[in-house]
Length: 130
Image (cartoon, rainbow, N blue to C red):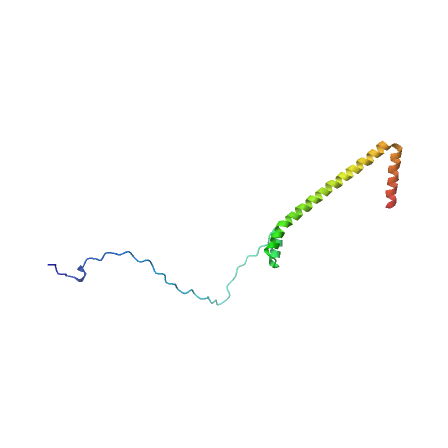
């Protein structure tokens, strides 16, 4: 025969089970906050670097990204090519001046009196033209 229970809690403890995963319970999002006065907006304004000014103007004027990309890509390319062309023209002008000076010097020295007279006539013609 079994022994009688003396207390209500004399039963053996139940075997512990693994806890259930937490259940997701969505909560409503908070509504918009009503301010008594408008919030203070701290805005830092910095001057744009000079190379970005054209891009910012193009973007602000509603131009597309293609116009900005073209300005960024072709701007320095155009400046570089114009500089190269100008340098070539300066070198060609210098070579032409040196060549003309050489031809005049050779004509004066080799030509004798006829060459000197031709150079003098040429100088007179230039002075008369103005």
